[in-house]
Structures are given as structure tokens and as C-alpha cells.
Image 1 (cartoon, rainbow, N blue to C red):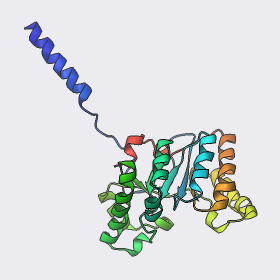
Image 2: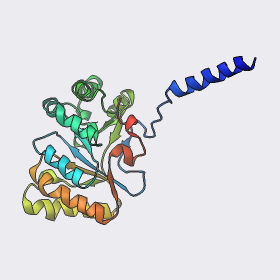
Image 3: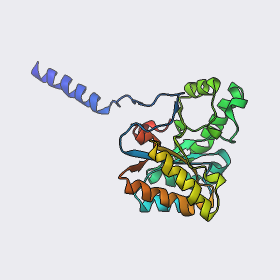
Image 4: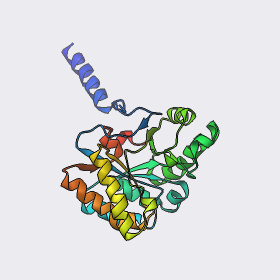
Length: 237
């Protein structure tokens, strides 16, 4: 009898060790998110890449032991699968920014869904997974867009710090305007930062100034998923 019970308990213990725990996602789908929830964190995010400047940005982030989130586009991702892999290998988060950077509210249900699934078809061969986080182009959403994102199981990330770096691509403006916007909105409590790794001055100047400020304030530069309390397993489908 005791031998039988021992075998039963051994089988139960073995099953407990081999049965995966259910995935718990802390971040809701189809709801616009603008703020980190983990104290003392800040999420630097870069849209529209990868680009020729992205390797330099990855080198910079490595020097500062910082992690970031990259919301990528279809053609750029298709042309740079190695950069997608490098992002993930170095602890960054790869997110979806749609395939074509169209205004999603201008599309119907199928068109919105296609923008996401076509991008998944590009990213999945490179990473073995597809993003579970997305940022809508121009930060534009409506109820239909959010419904599609719920149906496709996407977390919708906006921003609370907009550097407007795309408007300020020269050596002076990137600091006098974009970096000042970063400081002002950081002071106002923002902590999800929007910038673009397709622009030279963003990578050559703004990114390091932001990282220096983050360190000076004692903040942790991390991914959007991490700053919202999601572990890496929840960043992807």
C-alpha cells in the first residue's frame, strides 16, 4: 500500500514539474495605455524602424545598460531580420507598428486586421514569435481599432512623453526643442517616451541626452512590457 502511495505521489510531483503554469498577462488588450505602472521605471520607445541608425542606437543602449521597445514597420522589419533578432537577444522588446503606417481609423475591420497580421508574418520568421504589444500610427485609434486589437490580443501603447523628434532634425533643434519637451513632460509625470530610430539626430544626440537624464534621476530605462509589469513571456504571441 505504502509503495503504491509513493508511486502516486511521485507521478503527481512529476506532472506538476512538467505541466507549464498558465500565462498571466497583467496588461489589458484593446485599451490605450499611456503610463508605466512599475515605480521608478521609464520606457524609451522608438518607432518606424529598424533603420540604418538602429545598430548605433543598440550600441548606445548597451553602454548605458538600458532596455527599450522598438515598434517596427513591415518593410523595414522584412529588410532587417537580423536587427530584430539582435533587439530581442539584447533584452529589448519588439512591438508592432502596423505594416504600412496607415491611419487605422480610416480602415475597416479587415484592413486594420491585415495591417497587424501581415506584420506578424514578417516578424515571426525572424523571432519565432509575434508581438503582443502594438502602437497605432500617429497614435490614432477609435472604437473599431480597439475592438480589432482586443480580437487579435494586442496591448495598445500610446505615449505620455512625445519628443516630436521628427520635427527637429538638426543639431540645435533636437536639443533645444525635442530634449526640452522630454524634460518638461518628464517633470509632468510622463514615463512612456516616443521617439524614432529612423532619424539621424535622434540617434546621434537625443537618445544619449535622454539616457543621461534618466540616470541622473535614478530611473530605470526598461521596456514597455516590463514597466507595465509583464514578463518577457507576455510580450509576444
